[in-house]
Length: 264
Ligand code: NAP
Image (cartoon, rainbow, N blue to C red; front, side, top):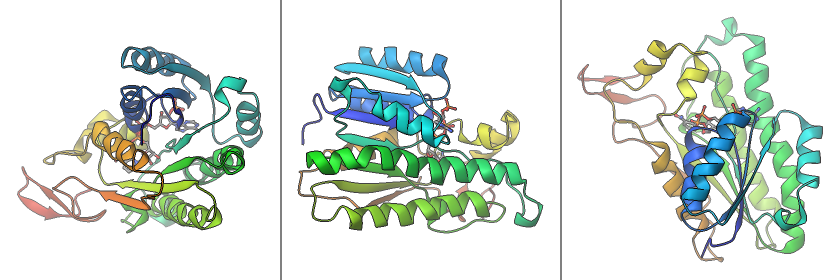
């Protein structure tokens, strides 16, 4: 399916997987709706996406945790941007790596409000239009963390397990319409994800990727473009993808250490 001139809405487009996905759709000639909280980063991505071949870009500030703002932003889209063809629910984050009984309540709230409630708010604002128009594709960003919980990550893993349930539920609820629903579930991807998790501690973040070649954001963007560009009658339900040195969310092989194990 050609992606030329399709309106692709990407949340969390200011960095990492969302940014790479913007460039991947840009090179297919799509029209891009880009949203995130950091306007400076988003403007830079918008300019690069135009250089990469996007037919047009409309970037706007959005905090997916804020339901009234999400509904208002989607309702206020200029007419030429309102018929969204593809929604990529990518905005998300992890905070901390703590035993559940020692976890920080504000970290839990931020992860749940962003990864679960934010995804729901955006979906609720966009999908009715897709159903009405009889076309659309929702891509949700899952994780190997949603397949298998790892120690000290119960709440982040729970948000991704919720994403899996929402993805599968939405696919059942749009059955009978042409709308497609896909979850892309990567393992370790090198982005700002770990820096955000460890609140800017770059040394701690770098350790996550030691002795392993992680996925790049481009690898994940490739999978998203592949799923969206299948023929209209094909729905890719899930794509589970990991680096070769990762078997699942618990088991890694790290070259320097020469060991296999949970060295998260
Ligand atoms: P990243 O580089 O930190 O990017 C996260 C993006 O989400 C940023 O653009 C950020 O933008 C946006 N975001 C966070 N909170 C937001 C909010 N309240 N409202 C709007 N946007 C928000 O990390 P990433 O790895 O690309 O993460 C993207 C997605 O992939 C997440 O859902 C993550 O859970 C998932 N994932 C990542 C990995 C991995 O290993 N990296 C693996 C599996 C799944 P602003 O800060 O500018 O708002």
